Amino acid sequence: MSETIKEIKYSIFLLLGLLISFLLTGIFPILLIYNINFKHLGFIILYFIITYFLYKIFKTKFFENLYSIPLLPFRLFFELLTYAIPVNLVTMNVFLYLSFPVIIVSYTSIGLTHFQSPINFELKLYLSFLFVYLFYVNCNKLMLDFVAKISPARYKDSKKLKPYNIKEISEYLLSQDNLKIFIYAFNFLAIILINIYKFQNLTFFDQILNFEKPILQSLVTFIAFDRAITLFKGLTFKPSELFNKIVTGIKNKKESLK
Image (cartoon, rainbow, N blue to C red; front, side, top):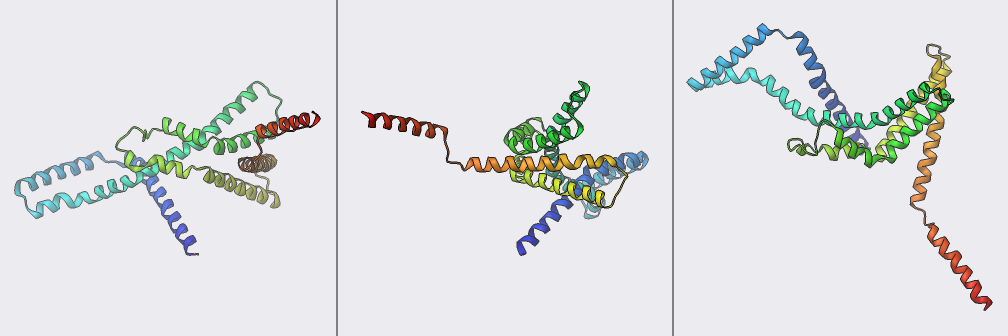
């Protein structure tokens, strides 16, 4: 129980970190750009220049405080930004990883529609979901290498970013088991929402019922495939051994006839 509480606590910390990172690097700069007053900004810069030179000339605690205390909010901002950088870079890698197969599926669907393929909407959805699920899990190592190459972070080459361990964090977060949890969680929520829509006899989006069968069947197919792969990994059957046993049996029979 204590372990569960601990993990919940750290999950909250991670969510707060993600929220703060989003505010610092997304919302805050936008608000600053739209609300900036260049006249006030000029006075602020002038204040720091004057107090800095006064501090350098007189070397007193009073002028040091006049210069340094107003800088505290900026120091806090840049301190928080230090923590926001790895969060943003990992979030970017997750987005690149998750979006790539979706983009492939989207362009394929557009191509099939353009060439008037006889595949209907439900089959397209089923194959799309299944492809994305299988791609996420079975192309894990390939995709992690691909993300490392195309990521704007360039954490493989940048000496400044290497201490953040972005590569290790990304691989830990985008492991096969975590991606399976993501797939199951997505289907769990989708099925709940569809059932609520059905049982409440809602009518605001009639097309939602067309998603039910493709979502369910793609999940069932994915589970069957994943289970088959798991069993195959522990399988002791080898075609070479079967072949050798058959050949040995034939040889033994020939020897017995001599």
